[in-house]
Image (cartoon, rainbow, N blue to C red):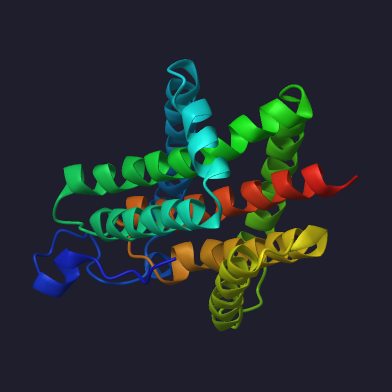
Length: 247
């Protein structure tokens, strides 16, 4: 996750229809349109992720990535994760450049491509070991249902959920330390780690959903979509991992 700092706000170019004012203070019709655009762009990012993933599988790149990263020990996998994190950071910065719409969309679809890269070897491994796409389909359905429920709670609750932000940031930081430690010292994080990460991703989705109207101004729907899309994909990753570990 990255903080939202649109570059045109910093330069004062005035491209936002309501300036820097959060969407919650805009007229109801404009606010509803803004929220609709956020979720349409999340759907577009998901569709792009599926398309990129299909290309990686059809061309055989996904299988080659599986062989390379899973046979080379933890170092290669950590390098892939690190590269994807750097790419996502650049994507988030690009999506927040409200003065440059093409760059915003480059950030959105760049984030989808980065997610496709890190998922490709994992999904290839799942298909090889699970004997089909059933586990992936189950994970996708469970993630979609959870995302819909969390979206409803985040949108309609009157409780301020901003207290979740530091918890999520610390939680993901500790999780990163645990992941690196697991690779270095060769131990299995187990099912409980996956379940904890699902909960952490859910908390991230909750406060980000509420933050769509409380923190983002109208016109910043692409930037808002990127953050929620990445949290959605993180939840999908750990739901899939948990289903693989359930036996």
